[in-house]
Amino acid sequence: MPSPIIINDVLKTAVHPLSNEDQKLILEAYHFAEKAHHGQKRKSGADYIVHCLHVAKTLALIGMDTKTIIASILHDVPEDTEVTLSEIEKKFGAEIAYLIDGVTKLGKIKLRGTREEYYLENLRKMFLAMAQDIRVVIIKLADRLHNMRTLSYLPPEKQNRIAKETMEVYAPIANRLGIGEIQGELEDLCFKYLEPEHYAETKKIEKTYLHEGEAYMNRVIQLFRNILEKESIQIIDASGRTKHLYRLYQKLKRHDMDVTQIYDFIAIRIVVPTVADCYETLGIIHREYRPMVGRIKDYISLPKPNGYQSLHTTIFGPDGRILEIQIRTQKMHDESEYGIAAHWMYTEKARPSWQNLFFHKKTSPTTLPKELVWVRQLKEWQKEIGRDDKAFAEGLKIEFFKNHIFAFTPKGDIIELPEEATPIDFAYAIHSEIGNRAVGAKADGKMVPLDYHIQNGQVIEVLTVREKKKPSRDWLSFVKTSSAKSHIQRELRHDEFEVK
Image 1 (tube, rainbow, N blue to C red):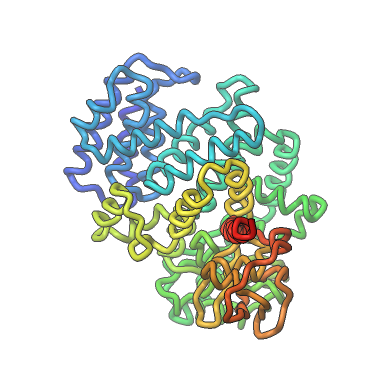
Image 2 (cartoon, one colour; image 1 turned 30 degrees about the horizontal axis):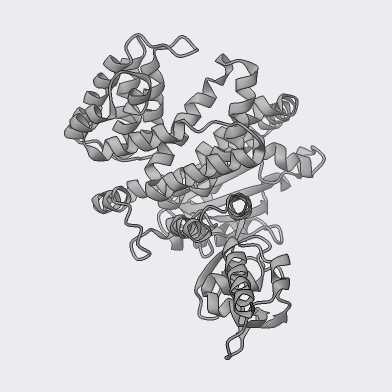
């Protein structure tokens, strides 16, 4: 049987070293689950326990804590065997049982009905679970990843439904949590089933171009190593990476399938010890090779909304070939691969407080990590709009699936907004009274209209009047955030009620 080999892989691939006690607990969970699933088979013919261990291996690989790994091994036991959740709680504790219960509830969500119903039912439950304990969603992402890897054993109708659900719900959630590797693989697997012809075409382009570029990439990496070592820059790692297939296809579509226009098809990734080393490395590379204008991106000083940090530059490299360089620290690299999960790697001493935060669901603004503040905001917003299904569905589409931007207050506070957000959205994100009393706005010191689309990184100043003022009904035609719409509508309803 392959499962004993996989359980050893789980133990070996754990990012942070497992204590003897941790290993003992994981093995105990494995034997418990193997016994409970005895005789059960997957559609592939493999023992059911193999699936559970693949999920656990993914979580061990991205550095999740021991309780999460144990919960993943046991996650299908209450649903698919005669063993109850109460029995699991008695043997493995309330926290693990709580995680398993959350995963079980998410597992009952299926794609059905119209697109609107699908978004509403699935996303409401997923976000509620996410707001209560992020680990539940991370387990579910790993579970869905292995299901996608074995999708070929299911009939075509199920393949299409599961792939569509994964592309529309799970991959964006992995992106929002910053777990790039899981997001990329999920998208590639979905791409294969949802657009098989384009998948085959893109695969062919990748194979041809990658074969031509591999030797060049290896030569460039060695060249950069030599240059940086002469400058006494310590290199933790230097490697090449190619774009995930689905993302490559998205870029190819914008360039009429011309791969020569894809400058980051092959990227060189350089990992150095400190932030100062990142900037010094960038300077050295620019001294040796001319950078492309407009292609230098500093995601260290201004991270992406999901927390991603790195320096990106596109240069005219050796032999005049264009290539992208990414420069980051080890911590930044781990967070770019594993997203929010990477916090378990770097908060070993603080891990108990993280578990208390999640398990007891006390998502205080002062204790919640900045990468998860949006989860708390979403939960508060859900309370605010109540059971308004249409508003909920519409808001999720706009605020979750669209790219977000950062804008600054004059004092330097960062406000996160969806793309195309306006100064009115910005005002209400600060405080409802600032939104209500807004009469004008400045972007980077220049006057802009109230329906102006804020650009990433701009400083926005909202001009207000002192006296109490009602928002304009016209604002509803251009605001983007649900929070702004909700506040405006509430004020207008209140005003109408007073008139009556």
